[in-house]
Image (cartoon, rainbow, N blue to C red; front, side, top):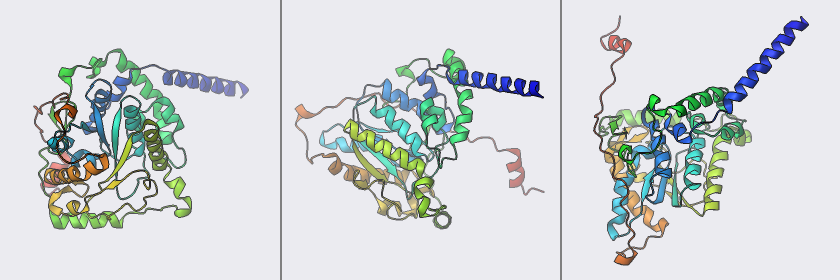
Length: 376
């Protein structure tokens, strides 16, 4: 029996050494940010390129979820703000799915490497308890180890995945092209200094969606919004344990704001919830005194502007963006009227990559096809 336990202990020790060795494997950070190639999450690779390889200034950066990605056309907004002769370079760094920990990674990468004037941080009707599903795909090893542990349902999952992630990234870094990734930046293979995803969600010149001009049926939209609001449970553990329940957003929003203060970056909050949501966040404690909160609730109240209960269609995005063109100048300190020619600082940046490959609907799974024909 003693020999059995010695062998068991030796096996466990060897396994731990192997796992530790995997975690310590080096890899290329550019490869890491490119390695997520699923749907619009592939925007992460472009975000890294825009920060590190594109010298075009970043005066205003938007960070948030698909609400901002689909709802704010920063390409058009930049043109609107330049109408008086002033050139501000805007960038939409939004990525689908909730999770303030991923917002922290994007903001840190940006502010630690670039001079930025204003950070516009998306806010929705309530902070989500959830961590972002892609946090562990992009984070440094220390980020994963130091993440909040109570209450963070992704912590153990992210930790268990870490050795395999490191091994995978090490292998991809040896020959990125074999995995469809880039070894080095190529301006000819770049989506441009900013990307519009309000009309068609696109990556690498490929449309990931059809044109986003669909208008959701108003009756269906309102019913769905009511169901979503009725299903909300903002304090599953009660207010007494709120700080534990919301440990993930609390930690990372505080980190974002602290870094912005250290870097002298102005923070502006953008209230962009789904349809039928309250006129203000349920809990504003994280934002009070940290920066102005922009909202256009009257625009969001129009049912004809919604593609689904969470996302504006292209018509809604155009109207929301036009409103931002009126709301942003006062908080940015932009004076009305044209500037003298000598004060105009216009740098063109990289042109947007054309969307050359149109969206094609995925094949219908057999089970769905059967169901659509009436089933059995």
